Image (tube, rainbow over all chains, first blue to last red):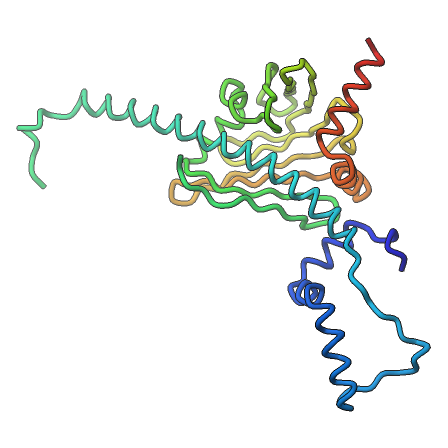
Length: 114
Length: 161
């Protein structure tokens, strides 16, 4: 398959599997180890003419992760501001509740011990 | 500032993107921050330098909403849609369409709020019309970026003036 033939869906689906991610990261090491195993006679492979070496294609991965990262940055900024809004709402609510409690609670001297 | 869990982004199906984030507040409060214009205007701003001068929300099934963002140079960007489901404080379903042409058409956005021990998990699912629409939105974002989209909007506005 030529590199431009990928779909983002296939990229995401492929990367969802931890074993496949591990293989992707270790691809150069894996082919080196295969050579060692082969030289030791532990594995063999078919006819040389049918050999189809695999190399890492960085483009689909970069496209998918760039987009996710951009999306993440914008939303992390939004959500950090939402945290601040919620923090403000909570302190306002606390003040209201405290004021109400202040109105109804008995004088400290009269408070019953637990 | 309260400590918060990291945001998660997932693509569970070929036409959806799900964003999940935990907030240190009860869900009624988070629901308010998502649906009351005076609160929403404080945080839903996107990239740095943008404000939200228009935020109209008619929060009921069939009701419409419209947001307009603006930056210091006066560039603006609008978005809006119709509420399909409104269940306070747990769920909102609404259509969403950007008024510029570069975002892959109308999407359906489902917002769910789950409260556990006074903390709220907010999950937002954006469903594109098709896998092609989602991929188009992703590729647009990946190849051009938001800034480039704004530049394009600039050009569009310039040609109309």
